[in-house]
Every structure is written in structure tokens, then in C-alpha cells.
Image 1 (cartoon, rainbow, N blue to C red):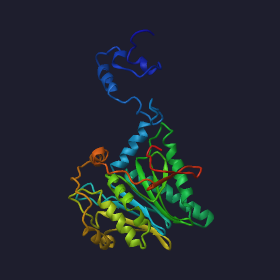
Image 2 (image 1 turned 90 degrees about the vertical axis):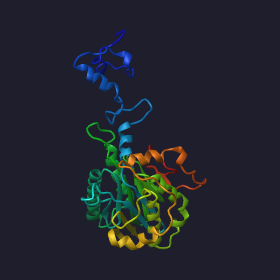
Image 3 (image 1 turned 60 degrees about the horizontal axis):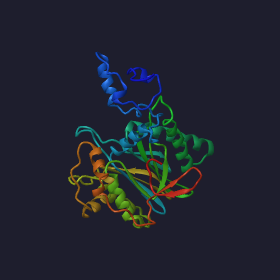
Image 4 (image 1 turned 180 degrees about the vertical axis):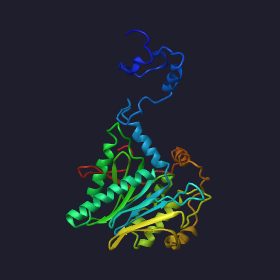
Length: 331
């Protein structure tokens, strides 16, 4: 067909990406639909649609949802792994949302993003661990557990009937190979890490983790490891906020130490030590939307210098067992 096409014939005839000159401007009741279509991204309506740049926008939107969640920090040393999280409350009349979930005696997760999606994933992980323990009379290896979860999350990136999970996970655990810290993205990618942070203003925490990598890897006690996690977590808070027992949850797992979540007064003693220390930098007050803070993190003028060559906080592990230094959220 030569010349302009009608607005509705575009949906049935494959063509190049439309522009305003490709259509006959409709009139009447179709005019509103026409202009709404013009301002929509034509490649983000479905998770199965690739953009010309090779991107899946729905997955990227799910990863943005993780950035709007409150911060979670994880790290490990030779014998233990720790995860610490900032709890949020929708109002002064409501209780704080749960940020750390126990999966089994040997593992648990800290979450950032949609809590409802996290509860669904947590129920799935608990069921898998229970079935494995019933069948083999031993805890489920973490690499198998993470692989099973990755397969479940990857299905949502290929089916148009659903959407990707809008939650990121930091899983800590202990098995015959020692302590583990694993980051899991909505894209179903997972990374074995030495230290990692996700959620709002997580870049500030990652800067601390890169700077003090050798210190917490060589920590001689669980208390020292938890203090490092709290210091990194404090860097994600606004200047008018400070660590408190009601705001922070901490979980620990390790050798001869089953997974345990500590809240309220239990962590107050460790928090009181960290609060007395000077803060790394003055941070502006946090707005109601964590996305504002993330936009500030992405500003190159505020970004800290890169770590020294050879220092890598995260190590990606592919399905064949090879490792690749660095962190890439798009895989």
C-alpha cells in the first residue's frame, strides 16, 4: 500500500516503527486513542517483545522496582554470612514490613522490591527445601536451590501471560563449601558475591564494601562482621536518619550457627557502637520516593572513583561453572 495507512491497519500489517506522518489523523472518538498510542513505548507492552536495541523493557522495569525498595546489605567472611536490611513502614500507625525471611536452618533471604512477590518466592523456596530434606534427609545444597529458583523466575520472562518478579534477593547460607552470599535479579541472573547491596541508595553501601573488602573478609568474629554490615547500611540512610533497633533487621548464618534473624533490642548493642562513629559523608534528606535517590546515584559527578584493579566485590558464575569478575545487572 503506497502512501499513508489508516491508524488501525498498522496493528495488522507489519511495518517499520510508526511516526506521526505514517498515519491519517483520526477524528472523533478515535482521536484520544491515537494520541495515547503516540506517547507509549511500543516495545514495553509485553515482556516477550524485543526492542531494536535488544532490550526487554519489562525486565528493566522490574529491576527498577528493586531500586525503589529499602536497602539490603550482605557480606561474608571465612565462617559466616550476614545480611542486614532497612525496614519501612507506610505510616506511624503501621508496623514495619518484614525484610528478611528464613527459608531453612541453613539459609535465608533479604529482599528489596515488592514484598508480595517476595512472599511468593519465599514460599516456593521453603517448599523446595522441605521436599529435599524429606527425600534425602539432608539440607538442600545452595547451588541447586538457587538454580531451581532461577529457572522459575526465568519462565516469567518468556511468557506473555505473566510478568517478571519485581523483587531482588540477597541469599545467605552455609553448606559443605562454606558460607555463601548470592544475589538474584528479576532477570533470573544470579551471582556469587563477597559483599553486595541492593535497593535504594545501594551504591553508597557498595562503595563501603569495596573500600573495606579485606577487612570484613578477614573478620575474626560475627560481631565484627555485623558491624561492617551496619556501617554500610548506614551510608544508605538520609542525613536526618540514624540506625535504630526498630529500623534495622540483621540475620546471621554460619558454621555451627543456624540461620537466625535478630530484631529490636537484640541488635541495639551493636548499633549503639556504630552510631557513635562519624558518618562517611553528609547525605541530603530522602524524599518519599526512593527513585529520587537512585537518580542521584546515577549522576557521574557524585559517583566515587572505581576500585583498584584486581579488586572485585561480585563474581558472576555462569551455568558452566566459569567465573567472570564484575557486576552487570543486565547479564
